[in-house]
Image (cartoon, rainbow, N blue to C red; front, side, top):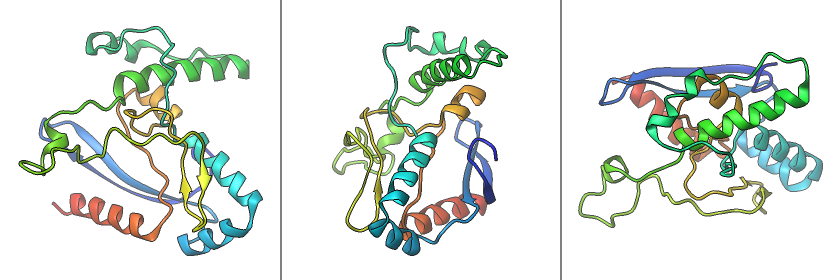
Length: 198
């Protein structure tokens, strides 16, 4: 098991950005994973599989935050995040509550998209839109369309996809996605291998 369930294999590469900060690009493949065509075909006819997939992906990928939590969202306040931790408790309800609070605070301070020069790096003189497409379109609930493609619930227009366990343990900016189509998978593989072979 683990936070992602049963992972059959993974691929990751580490690189530095322009400021020398290390970061990882990676892919995980789950045990029993269907190829995207088989998955889409089954999703179009199996409502139980639809519900199971939505529940699974929503448990791993969040794109909403609880902004009622009290902590100033400034770089200075975020410096205190590395010292925050979940208490060692045998009470599962207390653990879930602390995980929820800490992971949301991290996501608010680390995963909130703000436009900067990187957003327009390849758009100079063009349409002036963010290359990451933020703000993202809201979606009140996760759905699977008539083509068997999952469209994940999104309740905040400016939060990058995040995972509660990564947020609470690593306390850093991260992005996590479910890749439901061959075209998205191939684009991501190209992106990652391009970095790996720089």
